[in-house]
Amino acid sequence: MSIYSEISANQRRTWLLMALFIIMVAAVVEVAAWLLGGGYEAGVIALIASALFVVFSYYASSSIVLNISRATEVKHDENPDLYHIVENLCIGAGLPTPKIYIIDDTAPNAFATGRDPQRAVVVVTKGLLQKLDKLELEGVIAHELSHIRNYDIRVMTITVVLIGLVALIADVTLRLTWFGAGRRRGGDRGAGAAIMLAIALIALILAPIAAQLIHLAISRRREYLADASGALLTRYPEGLARALEKISTDKEPLEAANKATAHLYIVNPLKDRGSFMNNLFSTHPPIQERVQRLRAM
Amino acid sequence: MIIPIVIIAIIVIIGIWVWALYNGLVRGRVRVQEAWSGIDVQLKRRSSLVPNLVETVKGYAAHEKEVFENVTKARSALMSAGDARSAAEANNQLTAALKTLFAVAENYPQLRASENFMQLQKELSDIEEKIAYSRQFYNTNVMDFNTKIKVFPNVLLANSFGFKPADFFAATESERADVRVSFK
Image (cartoon, rainbow over all chains, first blue to last red; front, side, top):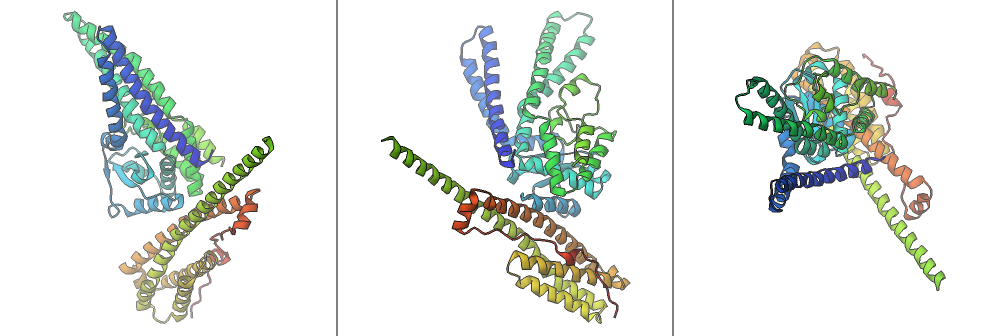
């Protein structure tokens, strides 16, 4: 598949995602209203509200992502070496130079966001800059630039806001209600506990659905593709292969990453692999497989 | 009745095909030109740094005349280069000349320690990297374009419309060859 068909496929996917979101929210609200004996007004209001929310998230999702990742912009003079790497690779890829943001965390990782190459942002952690050498860093940046060029960033970023937040809310609710249920085993507030249980049940149903939707939006093939075109850009697959190994074997967790944003990162930032929820949301192909493919080039 | 309709339909289809192909070829040519201007910017930046560098080195090693001459000659060749091929050649000459210059500079500890010199050296190596990447981008575009005009049946049209294959910006032997340093 050529890069141009990749771009239009991603644009189609973004539209589909936004349409699905609007229809699903409206449908859920309408069904709830109907069960409670209401009319069609609630559904119409939900339709309009969710449409407005989708428009808002189309424009705001990349700033939301940068905010929840606690990333701050870095200027040319603050880190000229990093800037030159990005600038040079962009010349090779024929892309405008994106903005560069840094997350103040020692865990090495990186992602790209934005809605098109003109408004793209490359984000790296301090740990990535400290732990990788130049060739490895170039591999990582080239991988992110491929995501930018293919418009992967558009789908991946809007996924954070439209699906990831649902997943995140479901997850948090689930934890809170489990915790709450444990505390209230005395049984003094029967009605409160019942409502909590109902919320937990809804969350329990919602979380896997959201996870499945993330999988549909973000296929694993996308990472392989970005690895391959990144390697084509640097002409040195070994750099990216070594970087992937280093990032994945690093023990430190990335505080700013969560289930809503995990799929953006080059390597899964959630270290708690045993957790059922984390595995549910994992969209990353296995590192060994990625490294193997890079080494076979 | 049916035969004229078929003939007209075939003519229309061919017309649309020619139209689309022509536009595609023009787009390809524009992409190559754009990519070329990307190289050109970096080559200009490089040649504008050279006089500054020569002046700095002269301050410490005034008698290395031959080296300076070579660098200046290569620079003016680069500035007057018209097409991709001659620019590539001149650029490769400049690379070789600068390599000699930096090798000579190794013998002057004071020069190596000078802030200005280190700054220039850093800037030049960044520009060289940028040239390498813009060359990669340019050559990719050239390859796409050249393939497009050479495959059948495009080749029939490309020839009659006067589309010519573009030159690659190649790294020639002089860049790969060892630099001989003379200490006269």
